[in-house]
Image (tube, rainbow, N blue to C red; front, top):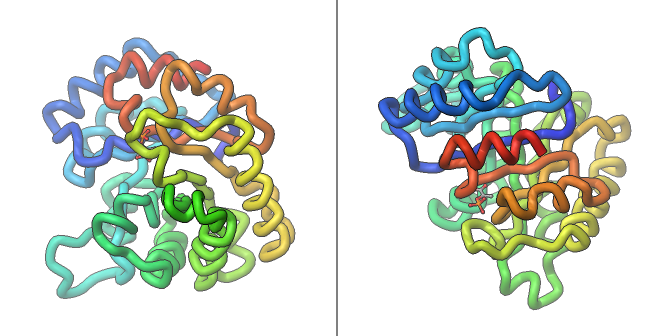
Length: 249
Ligand code: PEP
């Protein structure tokens, strides 16, 4: 179950197994169990087993994978499938992260296939949506985010929609040190919530997270913003002290 507030750490392509072991030892030492929130780590796939073993016994900490392929098995060299991720201990999967969309050219349709296959194998998809700076300046931010959301969940069965997580991550805020203001985040979260309600009545339990240059300095004000159920953090989760501080917010 995902309890709000939600704190998701996306390690991106950082911390292989040796570093992951040291990171988890430090993090678990300074971050005591908190049952009133959800904390999850998204290490690189090669470090999943290390993080899974390190957090054994800490049921307050969940585990996710950063990406899956849209098929469950076969001749797809280099890819990881949903059942393999589940078998390795993942409970969640990031889908449609901006780096997947913009560095690896993932389309909305590919994202939709990944969102759809995840729950079939017991993974909760975290659908990431967000506009580029150019799209925001053209006043197209809402249109782009709505399109990503609508197509992203289009291959899901309606009754499964309440089980997903959505992360609003404006591309211009990711890794730039320039976070959205709490007002801007709130305003997009409101639109996402309304769209989810229209597409899937009964989906009010879907957490909507904000991501993009969240730090120890701005986490509190972003988490207090109306409609923000949690944060998805990249750079600021890479050191265990900073991440523990954010998770205590
Ligand atoms: C991310 O990778 O999802 C992210 C939000 O990165 P950062 O916190 O570095 O902007």
